[in-house]
Image 1 (cartoon, rainbow, N blue to C red):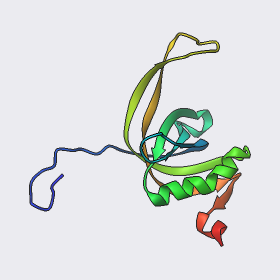
Image 2: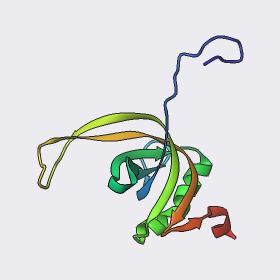
Image 3: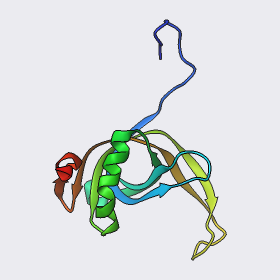
Length: 135
C-alpha cells in the first residue's frame, strides 16, 4: 500500500466478506479502557445443498457498524434468525482448551478479528434497516 508521501506502509490488511447468522451480541466493559461490542457470527460456506459453517468471534469496529449490531441485538436475544452480509478484517486463529462438556480438556480453535461492516441484514427473512427502525 502506498501512502500520501509515496512511501509504502508497514501494514497489510486482510479482508473477509461473507454471509452468516449473527449468534450473540455482548457489551464488554473493562475497568480501564473504553467499552466495546463483541459478536459471534456463524458464517455460511460451501454448496447450498450441504452448507458448512465457520464461526467467528469478532469486535464491532466503528460507530456505524456498532450501531447496526446494537439495533439487531434485541432480535438476536429473542431467538430470531438474523442473517447478515458482513465484512471482517484481520482474522486470525485463537487456540483454547474446552473447560467443560464432552470435549473438556481438548484443544479448540476459534477465529477472531474485527467486524468492520454490515451491508444488509434480514430478520426471519425480512429485510432489516436500522434507520427505519429508529423512525
